[in-house]
Length: 321
Image 1: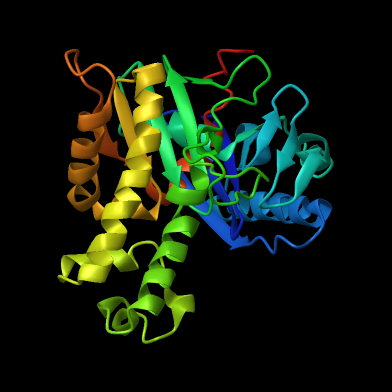
Image 2: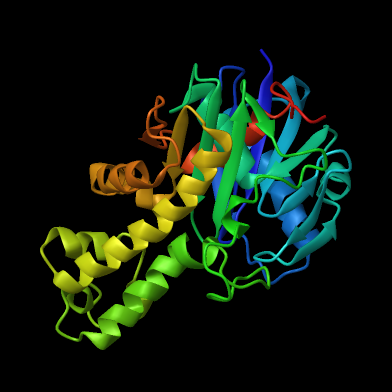
């Protein structure tokens, strides 16, 4: 029996999992990333966690085929580097070379959202579907494009940076340095910022009660909770946020016409409260409404999506390679 290791290099946590050939997660472990550290220290922790996971599951390294790593940012898949990432401050970071110093296994490196999209295509919400796009709402706004169970990211592996299309000329500043990027309006970070601003402006809002006046407790789902309980301030924030999210999705549909759009991240737990109004907003705005329309789903792979997708990288190669 051959196994595959999947790694998520997250902004908050490093997650390592053992996966079988069917995309089933057997065991995972995690530790804090401590992103302010040098990349060599982060990679050393990855290697330690790989050993821990294998030891706890009683799997010898000789039964592992390779290690797949999903990281935020633009990868060079051929070299195994992260060319640029702003949330972890990676710049031409040699993840493959560094990790292979510690483990005697081949290493494959990919963008984390691409890994999550692959996981949904192989064993999740887009299983048996040829064309899908994952929108991963988190600290940033990631995207993954899947064609025939394979990642599409362009001739240089730098494509599918969906969060960095501009939706508002000269708008909000984005982490990439540009203004008006979709990520600056529709990421979880942006939603929390919007919620905080509304709560500060409206001290009687239920939002303030839910976080006990401590805005550090705000998460992306807080405003949905307050809205469901009838708070008007929260309803207004949710409505505006869904409009931001819809505008970007309409652009994606008009360009790619995927069979399915999958919404991932913690916000996907809102289910119909998210999907139903979003679907209506998109339906009003797409270019051609006479053809079969894109379906909407929430992600099924949960917090393991990047790990599982990373573990599957060697079985479903990038179509541009």
